[in-house]
Image (tube, rainbow, N blue to C red; front, top):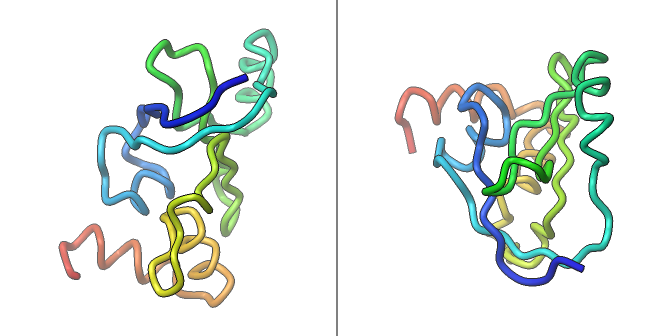
Length: 116
């Protein structure tokens, strides 16, 4: 069982999640889970189009997945709700809200151009 704060390293800056986290190289998020992606199937999943854009420090545990060319298909192994607050949602929840309201593209463009 993985409990507590764990570091997740972004494998690329060219993904929605990294951009939502303001292009940090890593994030520290809280975990509480028993399940993981079987490393033996990671290659097959990536060949089919799923991208694992965040991994733990060992590079063996898949922490963040995205499906490119989808408006917002993001999955995380940690619990972003632990850091969310009313008026200040965590990055994955902010992305979901922005995507649902058609504002994600504009927000990511603003982030990339350095606007607040």
